[in-house]
Amino acid sequence: MLTIENLYKSFGKLVAVNDFNLHVKEGETAVLMGPSGCGKSTMIRMINRLIEPDSGTICVSGTEVTKLDLEGLRRVRKRIGFVFQQFNLVGRLTAVENVMLGLVMDGIPRDAAYDKAMKALEKVGLEKRAQHKSAEMSGGQQQRVGIARALAFEPDLMLWDEPTASLDPILVREVLVIMEDLAKYRASSMLVVTHEISFAIHVADRIVLMDKGSIVEEGMPEDVFGHPASHIGQQYKELIEYQQITNARTLNSKNIA
Image (spheres, rainbow, N blue to C red):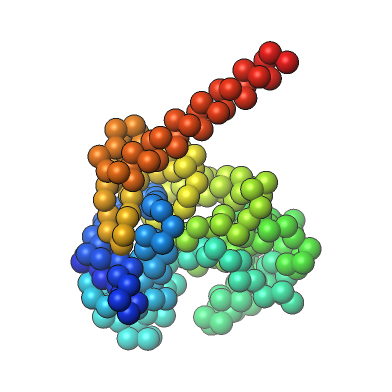
């Protein structure tokens, strides 16, 4: 489905992604994690060439993205949904108009685009907010509109670049629930960049850990977080154990009270 080989990207003397190799199977949910600045966002943005790689190959369903001209890239991008950290909604448009926008610009008749947009909004639980503008919605709802916009093209591959990073902690859960539901239906392959450990544990078929631009470990969540083979994996394991101890102490305190 998605095959990345020997991907490399530098910004001046800074090497952001170095000899990156990854294969995501059809219907698989792979979660990419690692410390801030390790190259996760740069890597995922190279898949549809929002950032141009210096070298390496990227193939989506057999199409080598790195060799496409602008027209070919435009066609393949329709098969790749991308959810950004920022919502990137047009403030003067309603939710359904924001979701329709890309479809109409792609030549789909407005009535058909409206139907597709409404179906996408239903998938994220916002059909009743279809006529609301950005200012009338919470951050979580705005991000769900962004997800619907990506789903409207019925993509083969969904890319998520830290979709909860811009949200208040209280709103994070509503977006994660939508992501979990989409992963369960397996309508498309998913590659998710996130710091949300609980999401990764419950949803990922495979965890991929990055450090300094390269993959340092990958495997099933229970293996990577339970029996890590890398320093980064060990740090995640210790963090999970700390959270479990903290949660247990909080629960005991409530029971005593």
